[in-house]
Length: 499
Image 1 (cartoon, one colour):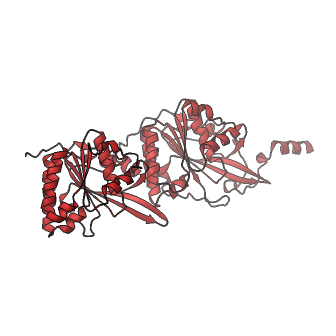
Image 2: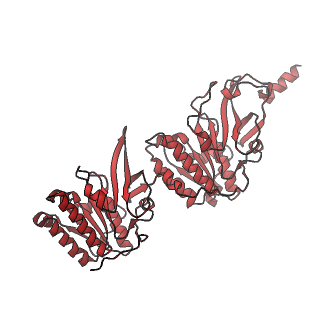
């Protein structure tokens, strides 16, 4: 037989969402790859998911087990997963138990069986599940290396892509590390009370790939891999789209403060305490864009779509016509056990596939809670910001201040300059016996703006920003020394009559 040498660019896609992104297209055709992980890590599901995708694309697969669970039990466990198709068995996907052959005849008998069955089934994908059994039965380490080499020769002759599944045996697997074309490691780790599944590509010969740890989930549809947002966007062009001018909020007074709005492709932080109007401000921004034909998306963590509709309607902001028109859309992810990389995948989809032009992420603190490595959240947000800039998407996000009142104001996140060009500060302040809302522009990069402090009015007619406040002190602290201009019109009129 003459060994075939397929081009290194010829790939075998896995069909697993996210994994082909990590592998930059899939496994190299004819390569031999190790999938390593402890029991329960997801190796068998991953291998079967690759098999069913392969046969759906017209290929043929052979799944060989060595001291693994019975085929009947394996298939019973796979039936509930979305990728499973019983009709593909055994014509396109054949299952074979080879442990008895291995036990009776050793590694040489196993190699002969694999050679025979690959030819009989014309398989272009081979799974060998339970490689640790072959390692344990090998008389020496050298014999096991010879087995790996023989397997590579056999599969290489017919350009059959091969996955070897093993727990690792606790011996470091020196032979596999040095001889196979790639090594994928699956593991589950706990952080406090949370369990996180992670996939790492330790080696991928002859091709680039996304390095580092990436989270994955086992869902009803099968395995879904969530590449780290920083890794995915890091390989993209950093060229920014040219700005098409300002993007307005459609709020009387605020657009004047911003000298016409924020720039397209910029990122704006809405910073302030709970109840200061951050969410409504963001909703006005994406609704204004939707009215102008720009696709806006509200990514919410705390309010369901129905609550968003109701709250918006209570201040005269009707979202239903824009939702029906399709220029506005809503997402809701309760801040439970979200996975940061899963959120990142969804946000990338909104930007790259859905054509969103205005994006409002309501809840930076929810992103912080979704990360198991706290320092990552700033890098994650910086990657999202850069992706938005490159795509010309104008991004808003809310950040809740840690104090309601006080003289000291702290941003609960580092690296603000790399996260946003613009900062709007909203504040509740005590004025006599009333709690009033105020807004100011702390930062508007590359543009002049109104430096004054203005009152923010929210009523059933909507949001409105008033005239500049003069002669008032400590409003930014929430503990104001009253200015005559802050008195209600009725009180000012009464005072005038007394004169």
